[in-house]
Amino acid sequence: MKKIIFLDRDGTINVEKSYLHKWEDFEFEKNVIVGLIELKKLGYEFIVVTNQSGIARGYYTEEDLTLLNSKMIEKLKEFEIDILDCFYCPHHLEKGIGKYKIDCSCRKPNPGMIFKGLEKYEIDIENSYMVGDKLSDLEAGEKAGLKSILVTTGYGKNIEKECNKKYSVAKDLLEVAKIIK
Ligand SMILES: [Mg+2]
Ligand SMILES: [Zn+2]
Picture 1 (spheres, rainbow, N blue to C red):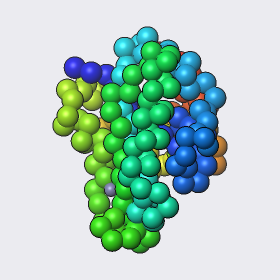
Picture 2 (picture 1 turned 60 degrees about the vertical axis):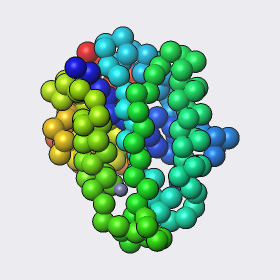
Picture 3 (picture 1 turned 90 degrees about the vertical axis):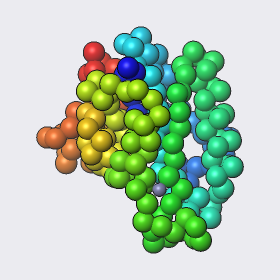
Picture 4 (picture 1 turned 180 degrees about the vertical axis):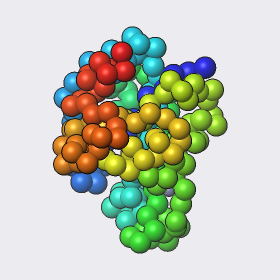
């Protein structure tokens, strides 16, 4: 059974820039590489679960997103960090265009992407976590039965106070590793 850290992407792995879709604009958040290395040492593997309503809105395509994600995965591989899988939600009920305008079960806070991971891999839910910078990440994790941790990178700094009674709070992924340890 795999112990998994489900990771939000924007604001958690990379610096939040609205509707980021170009590798030139991609910037790792602080302590992401060292944090993931520490978590790997603790026996965790990684699955990315990311809301990408920019696709629904027509700002970029699924191909753009897949290319960006593969660049990110390649870069992390240089540090011997493997991303087991990347799941994304391309939908948005109000702002979506065409086939993307649906009330889906994958857009966080819905737990659909995490459930996909749980179906595809044998995962030790009790010892797995969801980490993200928004309440919707934490709620999605909770709905799937995971422990959720807020990082105060990205949007996380704005919601630290409302979250810290219910969830663990870390300043970055390195601190996530310290909390889990
Ligand atoms: Mg985020
Ligand atoms: Zn969706």
